Image (cartoon, rainbow, N blue to C red):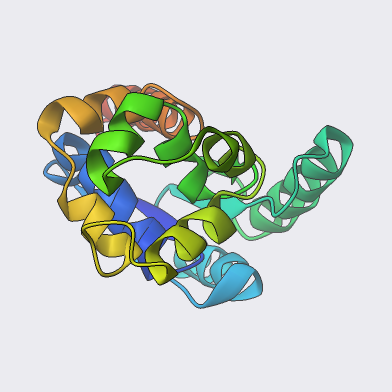
Length: 186
């Protein structure tokens, strides 16, 4: 399988590389861009030039469902224009990829040495900010958010990959692999 996953930045790419470790071993390339518009541009360029499936992963930067839906539709349309006949998909992390650390309070507590309840609840809506505040206060036994990724066990990664957008990305990769196999592509 030859599929590209394009993210907005290095942290998202590092996190997805850990959560999709098995998929990365079988022809999935995760590429970090610089920001939302950079990721969209890179995704369009890759699908047009390489003619391979592309998954674009963007932070929604909001929890407003209507706004998330509009962002995804616009990004999908722009990506589809560069890729007639090539599988592409846009995945929105609501509000950002860091929300995955707040999906399982026990996991976050283990990785950071514990979070106060109000910070954990706020983390579902402002995950990037809460993690940065936590790290800035020096309360966590890590130096930066990437240390959180390195601290994940295989069991942690499996649990985190059950939540969107990672679970949706896995489904896209599986369906793309089936389509490529049916078409005789490797």
